[in-house]
Length: 249
Image (tube, one colour):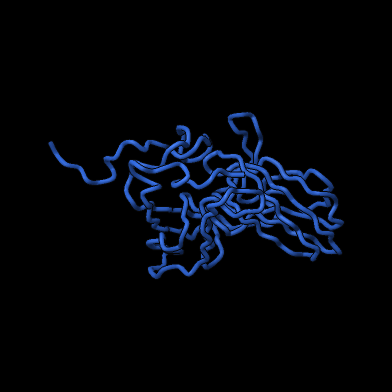
């Protein structure tokens, strides 16, 4: 009888990580366990398109409901449940941008889904400075709706950022085994933000973590990150939270 000591042969943590049929992961099972069976290093390989300030909602003086309009780098799709959403090229944070004038601070609430089909929402405060972009912290894959708490007096647009969503939970930068960007051999000096491990709310950060490359995305530069997976994420003792983070809010 052969002895197998490689994690590839551990079979008690079957999960396909999500229920989003529009994602590249297909039609997976419930998210009740970890990401196993697979090796201890996850290779995150992505080529994000350029960000845009108005490719989710074009600039307008909204008063309550923000009209979703897919633009460059996003697509209008219909989910399996019949919901029409604006789908991003990759999971990434969104941002609000105020127009010229004297804006009034307003709360913008973005609702949608992450890459694994889990519902999520985020509150972004526009601020009272004209022609200013405020970045969100959560990585959305699909946007289903946006509301604003009254007229900001000036126009507000909603678009994408270069804050990219990590595909598995990373609670510490030490789990990055390597990160390369734009076909450069040297390690990329980007910005990493660890996953939120407390109860998620509309104002907390991303449940898996985010990364901003050292230069702007453009649809040509490739990001390849090697992510070390702890036992709580893969193998016989893994959990759904250990692999994919706390439940979205």
